Image 1 (cartoon, rainbow, N blue to C red):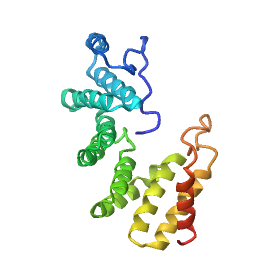
Image 2 (image 1 turned 45 degrees about the vertical axis):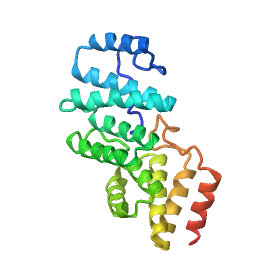
Image 3 (image 1 turned 135 degrees about the horizontal axis):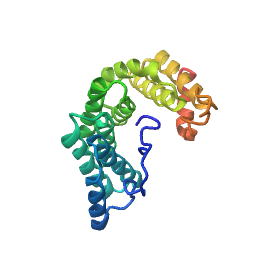
Image 4 (image 1 turned 90 degrees about the vertical axis):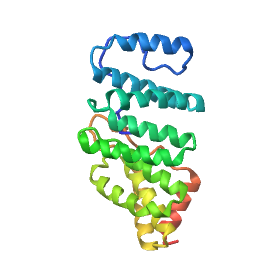
Length: 227
């Protein structure tokens, strides 16, 4: 998801749309407060944000609850809200977590389609799509992934975005025995991981790579050496 995309809207309220439990009482209170929201945009945003905080907990039950909320964003407000791309991206994340891989791929594609409708609201669905394809070893989708990554590279401002994109490219090229291209991508991923500042003056720590796992770093270094 786009960095900063889950910040709550400016509004005086309790954190009623940031619950991390979803009991019957939670649902009833959420629905009561949701009805008080004055605009479709706000209602869609609250539904999506609540889904995000349930997703953060990460249990299957809360991923399923998040999916229900996100479906409402799409079906009830999809024709009139810029929340659409983010809702589809979040659906992809929950579907992938639940092992519903083809549905997740379709959700990421839907997010990319929605970005074309609302070009000012870009997400990281292309990265989620790429990483899922790589993890599933769906070789028939590699060209689609590479094309999507290439299209988004100019907008990758943060080191973490550059790292994820380059790592996915490295994995695909390595799987296709394209050693030179895999090495170039691995070098780019390692360079992104080493960055200590973001390009934004007042947010120098935003979007840095937290540190790739030892095995991932070793794999990238192996590829960078031409392995």
